[in-house]
Length: 243
Image (cartoon, rainbow, N blue to C red; front, side):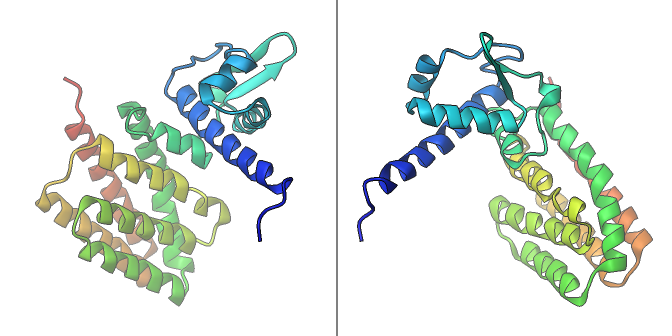
């Protein structure tokens, strides 16, 4: 059954809003519009994004909610200071991880965040994980061990760490899966492919973490995760070292 005349424009507008949010968000994250800068007037900005004014207004509301921009009468729409952006928002993280935008400093910040969050999550998982949780972690490890390229390894790695966060049974910690997946996806583009011996060592560390959790060894799960992330940082720093 065909959509009624009132339904079709609504669907089209929603697509325009999403496109405007994504494009404008990337522009801001990439520094095309700097902090404190006033965006072009509505007509010009809508034309540059190839969307209607209504879609643009909705997109502005979305980006305001993410902390990227603010609007005020007679002042226009301005880019807010970066420190006020919601950096844990999945879209904001994704824009910063774009290969054309991601910086070494941003990646190191994500590694630091992982160092704060993941060891404790692994420790909690060793205490709280159910049989189903453990099975999910081990299954993710097995898939990771069988992966044949960087892309597949990345996806299974994301599943592994997401399963551990879930097994912590802390709803706030579980939300950090977006930050971790952002780092792992960006790492494939920003960093260099790891040599096979490094991949093998990394896989062994994941194995040790998985079995520490499965056997309820909280201290070991914490320590092994710290070791993995410290080595991860060292490898990233070496492969992306500034000239």
